[in-house]
View 1 (spheres, one colour):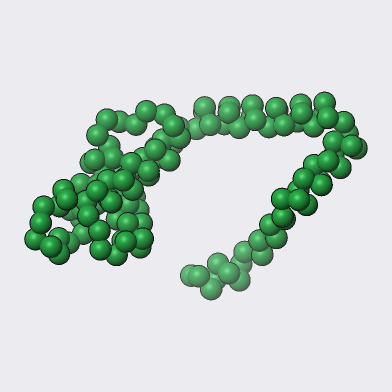
View 2: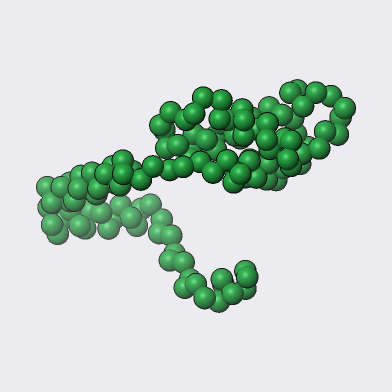
Length: 128
């Protein structure tokens, strides 16, 4: 699957350094005027706001649980429950786009991640 994806997808564009991007921005301002560029920027920001307002991201708990366990395992290998909880909080915050999430959702996600995808190696409480 990875090979097929590499062969089928066009190569990514090169990321331009910040000084090059700034130079291009100055060229656009010089060519079109600051007022037009400012209005285009404002229109783009408003369009993005409207899209975010209409699209409500939904947290798929099963995906969140797996993602939290996977991320913590990759970063820590051996970890404690508090690492799962911190990652669950980050995941829920990112998925909810700053809107209030269901109370207790990070804790529920961390608990399910611990139960479904982790093993207690130290004989201590999973809360430590």
